[in-house]
Image 1: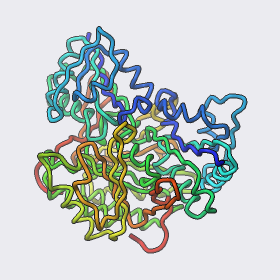
Image 2 (image 1 turned 90 degrees about the vertical axis):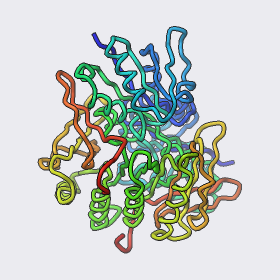
Image 3 (image 1 turned 135 degrees about the vertical axis):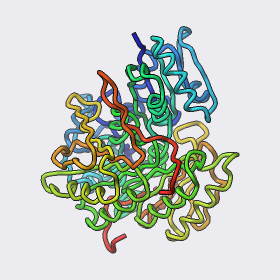
Image 4 (image 1 turned 30 degrees about the vertical axis):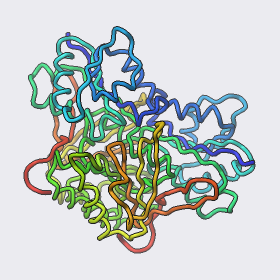
Length: 254
Length: 254
């Protein structure tokens, strides 16, 4: 008898943004696999075991969890945010696809969560109020020219853009290059939101025009949202600005 | 003294997928504005008042809620899913932007939620595991040629596509036309997921190849996810297929 394998998202970090469904999945499982800061968000019982790993080892982590589930253990693979957005649900599927036949008999339950761009958007207004896209800026898993091509395609077509994995020590120049490309197609006053650690103690929200957006305003905990030509800013005395993209689009075809 | 205005998302429908943060916002407010099926999801106290409206009256609803908040009442504007994705957060911002100066003094708190595409993706595997976009197929708020142009741009650039508002009685042909356009750029065996009412009693998930995708498989409660050329299906004996998009992209530039 195989165990069940849950793949959960903790949400952006505040316990208040983790769904009851995810909390219940945590109660059911006995072994937990994940990047250690995400595992640290969980309040586990003494009989529950953490198997922490580094953040570049997703496929090995997925295989370790599947191996334990195949052996009959109820396991839980833990992502931050939503497990289906640049996270562990795809890694688990990749491992099943290339793994032994018995892994296809494991009951896999993916539990959705609040992904970073939604949490950042909520803190600042409604920048994702119209058509938008999510792009991982990491060129570890895809060639950089593909990323450039996608940035051009969606900015020309009028999408708001959420950038995940914008920058890291090993990838220092990609975000600056992305801004450079976007400045070729979008107005200089297009709002750029640097949303760091939304909903957590160390949250920091910054809004700047694309013309002066600089990569060093982001770190690994930042989701960067770049508006479309329609995105607007509402100034408010004594309250933070609201950034939003209207639901409607009129005028010329973009 | 103005009241506070919460804009919350209930998640896809199951109470288990609504965050504690949203539940707490509901406890704080005394008047609730929303499309009536969303309001019906809330268990309110006798002193809490529902102001239900139809689903095409977002801007009027936002203005009504702002008017009450300006008068000192703590109000809650209720969306399904996430309030920032084709929902009420943008409508509230639009109303503030064009409204009287006193509305800019209202403390607006947007509470994020699990949006439909994340819930559908979780039920089926990880179709949003790589770069993706969300497009509203409603041409009530933007010209249809813009939608066609966006569908072409993102399918050519290799994005997975989540379609919101795919069909309604007043918009019967748009989804079929969208499939037609996508068949010009994507392989016929690209997986299409019709995800209806994810997480609810009447949930229904259907996966078909793009070549035979038909619009009548969708209704207003459906989110349609169209894979990229990379999206894969894992067959499993006795368990439902897994649909996923790998995190990596190798080979030719798309």
